[in-house]
Length: 62
Image (tube, rainbow, N blue to C red; front, side, top):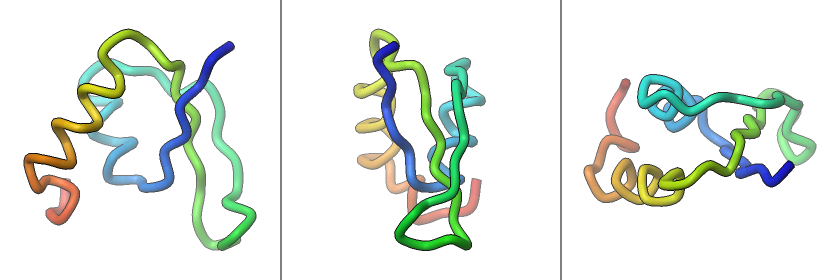
């Protein structure tokens, strides 16, 4: 299965609200306090991530 790795909970929550599904969660090996989220790499997922980044939402609390 082709997946997209997401390193922030804010982006993961945003994608979940948009209807994308997490397929796995794992500890971040670079920072054990953080979690990595794996989403199914569905059509339009990358566009939605870019929309999130461009909107400045990544700097706000979701």
